[in-house]
Amino acid sequence: MEMINELVTQLNSIVWGPLMLALILGVGLLLMIGLKGMPLIKLMYGFQMLWQGRHKQEGEGEISPFNALMTSLAATIGTGNIAGVATAIFLGGPGALFWMWMTALVGMATKYAEAVLAVHYRETDDNGNHVGGPMYYIKNGLSSRFAWLGTTFAIFGALAGFGIGNTIQANSVAHVLSTNADISPVLTGLVMAGLVAMVLLGGIQRIAVVAGKLVPFMALSYISAGIIILIMNASLVPDAFSLIFTYAFTPIAATGGFAGAAVWAAIRFGVARGVFSNEAGLGSAPIAHAAAKTDNPVRQGTIAMMGTFIDTIIVCSITGLVIIVSGVWTSGETGAGLSSLAFETVLPGFGGLIVAFGLTIFAFTTILGWSIYGEKCVGYLFGVKAIMPFRILWVIAVPIGATANLSFIWLVADTLNAMMALPNLIALILLSPVVFKLTKAYFKEEANH
Image (cartoon, rainbow, N blue to C red; front, side):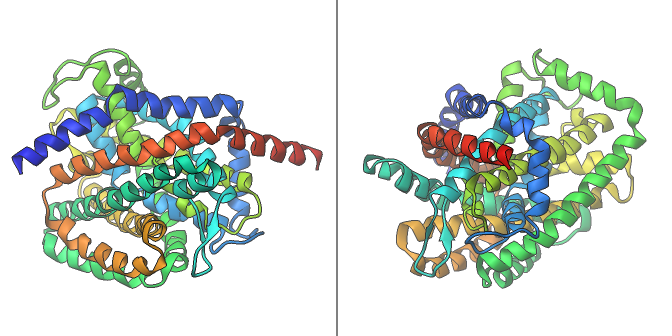
């Protein structure tokens, strides 16, 4: 086990090294420049399309454009927003939050391009459902010599889901409920597995409906609690921003339980946790957007890019600011425990419960959202007959994750995420002219109306 751990650690440092971080930020920047800043300029247009997407459903697909975003947000708003932000600050200092923001801003262009390509190149499977995502836009958009890239993505996507989208989520819930409510991790795992099984049987339609109701409710509740804390400590907020901007570019000395961090650590953990949280560049979210009832890839793309904005610029910022404002970031605590301590410090008696409840719902919806990604990857590799065995394995993995060793699972999941991102980022670079062309044509037509 020691040897495997060492091997994965070495692989992780390679795949999350400077090259990978430069590639993720570089692709996002390339797309943002090619789109002439459209994701930032059309931010309000994105919110407008998102609101219309609840009712306006034109074109083929299985789920509403709004529920497609909620399904992808179900998968992205999870432990990354609560435990991931805390880990980034613990390892990289407050400056890590700045690099999470930078990842999100260019990530909006990445997420937009992924969804545009997913809808543009989608297919229907043997059950008549619309399927899409990196494996399909690689297969249908690039020449046959790139087919192996699509297969590679699907393999890593199917495997990565068991880490980022399943066992890590179950483990974080088990840990937080054990700490705050003294509930046995075994019981947590079994109850979650039962609930996941009940929803999974209904397929993407039922998952989308559950996500469409749970995600907005939980996100608004968590954001509201965070805003209340920041208002209560309004005088400390400017200092928190000062720490974030200062330590994004200067090393930070050891203080209290904080070990100190170099600028590279702030960049590395900020970008890595930013990607872990909003998944821009991983290629996971476009799998959900491909099932949207829409007649235009660009319209769905503008809805998809809102996912990165909501996830990182709003939810992650709330967590990070509360941790810094409460002063507990130097306590030596990490992960969900640090977020829980921050909320509990400012709201004694129920702050920790807010985090526990938030994490439980977020993680539950993440397990549901990622089950779609995993089964679509498995369906691409082995056909629709493999989906039911995959779902059974998915449910079994929940209680295993709830009781396993977290640090090794985080390491494996982090590594698999990077392996998923590589084929997708290559495809995004090669297919970027298609994205630019479709975008230009769409907004030209909009201007003429």
